[in-house]
Image 1: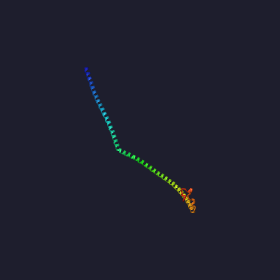
Image 2: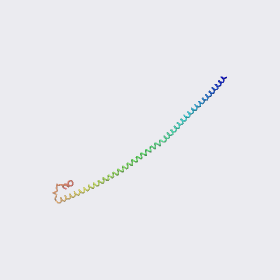
Image 3: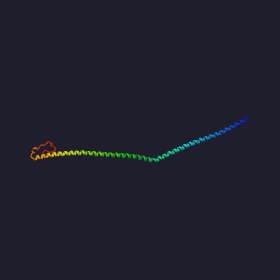
Image 4: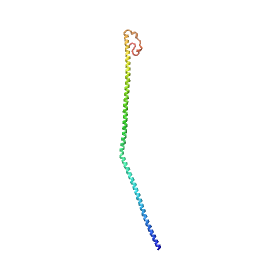
Length: 169
């Protein structure tokens, strides 16, 4: 009987251990299932995050493609405006330079005209003076010839008349 009690106790202990093993197996299966669910959830979360990021990148790409024409127009307009501004400034500088050169040319022209006028007046005075002197000398010779002293001056050249009037008149 002792033995039978002991067998019953051992059988009962074995039964309890089997139940505990089954419970632990179920728990292990639950843990495995939970780990699978967690892994699946993490993978789904990461996949959804990647899809969201990819969607955001695709939207940006679409925006860039949509706005690249606007950007090209902006850049084109910007550099056209810069070029037009520089062209206007250069044209203004050219106009100013032309105006300054015209003023300089007119000033030089007026100055030269003044000098030429003075020189022409000096030459005219000299010519008139020489003409008056030559006329007086010629008149003096004519009177000498008329008075009969023609022979005295024949072949002689007075030093002051050299190059102006010939010796014979």
